[in-house]
Amino acid sequence: QVQLTESGGGLVGAGDSLRLSCAASPHFGMGWFRQPPGEEIEFVAGISWPGAKTTYSNSVKGRFTISRDNVKNELYLQMNDLKPDDTATYFCARAKNSVLQWTKTDYDYWGQGTQVTVPS
Image 1 (cartoon, helix red, strand yellow):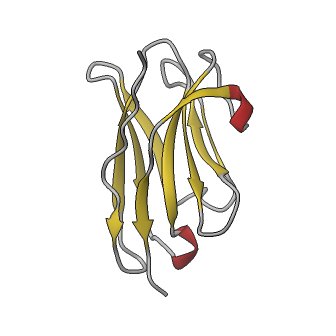
Image 2 (cartoon, one colour):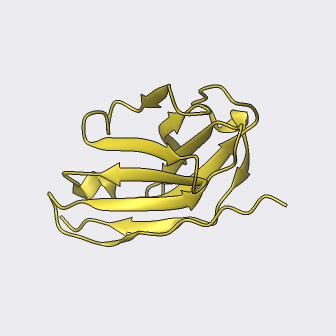
């Protein structure tokens, strides 16, 4: 049974930082997605197994960093310089294989989400 539980969300000011965490599955790629209020879910960042390759959406590139600790089996999303447009529910997800993935259909297990709010 694969259970993904995100943590680390919260209410922060513009320019602040947050780090999200989630349990990671060994031998599988992992990713972060987000769903802004009233919008579709969108890709944020992905990482391969064991972590040599990463990819980001253009909207977060240079501000967010995805990483994984393969000893602790943890996945992280370090979010810096947060903006009001980053307000969303953030989900971690497990890819169907070990390679880098960036589309929803390439992920088969999802967490329940954690809320990140950055007031304007």
